[in-house]
Every structure is written in structure tokens, then in C-alpha cells.
Image (cartoon, rainbow, N blue to C red; front, side):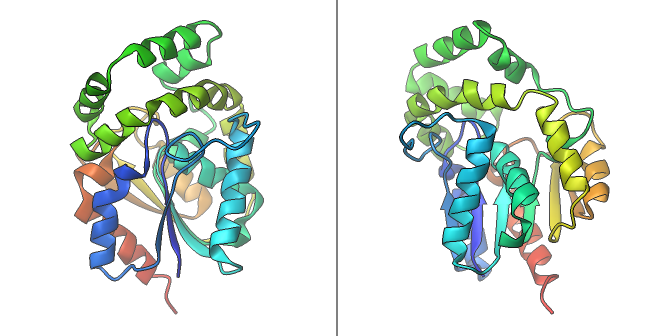
Length: 253
């Protein structure tokens, strides 16, 4: 069974390094670290970086990688958002999904402060310009302060220029009610088995309890990670890997 890990913003597949090693140690051998365009992967020609384009990119990538066989897919941050988009249009491509950030598709979700700045005309451009003015060392330091490990933070800092082209169009294309409507669509579907990873100290996903509420609505399992922040895969790699392996084992006939 192919397992795909997809990350978000501002990130590269380096955030998965420790979890990938833990999964391999547990016998997960067909593992693909998939980087969205602009976030560790090259931008296609005439790329608009909208939520719909990322959804369609992921759908095509999963179809190609799976080769006709449904995959297990794990999404983090906007990677989770892209997985939600995939599930809304092509759930048959997925055997199972495991994501954090399920609060993004709660009907009452309000985008976090930085996202709202990015979504604001002129203000967003000024914020990204300021981010671009930082040195790689400053960017890396900010990422480690927020919870990334040093290896991932350094890779993100080195890759930031291409990310900067995509941040504003992605977030602006996902301004509410886009994500709330996506959540309503998911609630109306018969989805494949899901696992919701819910770190208690993630500041970007809305009030406590919403991930559990949406997990119930989607018929997914809910697993809290207490005392862990947004980059749980860097902070609790072994715990996260075991959660995933136990979830996948439970799907076996």
C-alpha cells in the first residue's frame, strides 16, 4: 500500500523527515513525500496557486502515484486542506486519510490573524515583502521558535522565495465561506476511513473541540496530542508514527 505525506505552508517535505524514519522502522516501506508546487516543488507554467488548482494538482498526483490502487494519505496544514479538497471530488482514490487542521472546514472557522493579513489587499503584499527581507538565518530561527526542528527550518528558509509567490493567491482563494462550504460538502459524502490528529497547542485551527466535532460529522477517528503544537511531526515523531501505523493496521481485514 502506497502512503503519501503532503505538507503545507510555509514548509517543505523536510518536516516529515523524522516521522518518515519512524514509519520505515515500523515497516511502512512504500512512502512518498509529496511537495505542493511552490512549497518545495517547481511551479508549473501559468500556475495561479489557488485552492482549486492545488486540489486538482493533488488529485492528479495521487491518481498517478496510486496507479489505480487507492492510497493512504496524510496531510498537514495546507496539505490537509488539499486532502480535504481531494476527498470532496475523488474519494475513490483514497483508501484512508489522516489529517490535522480539521477545524479549517468547521462551519464557524475564522482564519487566523496572519492568514487574514495575507487575505487583505495591499496589507498582504506588505507582509510578504517584509518576510522576503529576512535573511535565511532569521527565517530559520523564527521557524524553530514556532516548533519546527532545525533541519526542517533550514530547508524551509532556503526554499522561501518560491513560497512567497503562492501564499497570497492560495489564502485569498480560500477566504470564507470557501472552507466552510468545503466542510459541508465533505459532511454529505460517504468518505473512506479517516484519522483526525488534533494537537492541543496548535494556534491556527480554531477553538478546542472543533476538530472532534468535525471528526464525528465525517465518521473519522479522533486522536488528541496533548502538549504538542502545529509541528507535531517534529515534536513527537515516534508517537505520531505509531498513531498512524495503529490506524492503518485497524483497516486490515
